View 1 (cartoon, helix red, strand yellow):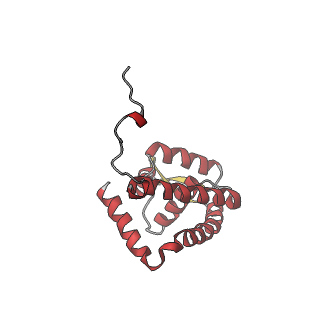
View 2 (cartoon, helix red, strand yellow; view 1 turned 90 degrees about the vertical axis):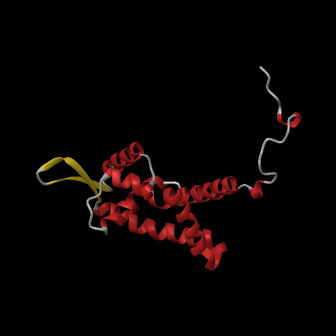
View 3 (tube, one colour; view 1 turned 135 degrees about the vertical axis):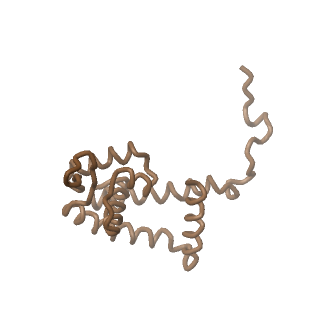
Length: 158
């Protein structure tokens, strides 16, 4: 086994400083954001961040009047289909979402946020939006530029 230890080998990283590594910076910011959001959602609303993503996405998509399937939720949230299925099962068990079939078609299963889910979600939305406002405040009026860059990255990597 010929394994070189880093101090004795050439510097293996492209970036000399972490401040120049966009991927590492994105990871740090997203991890900080996720940790704090996860904490407030669990503490004040007894839901996980993933629960919130599925609930809020379902509720948002309900406004489009389309029938919402797990596949549509997976595409919308970028959560793997198996993860969406597990989350929906958990949320249904907790009576936060409802599954239903189109009349005459028992195979197609659609989801919607239940009345209890709407109650929980409306309170959680207020918490999340206040948290996001505080977290992103440092960016100020350039937030639209950040959002545009993120949308461009999403589209380029879909």
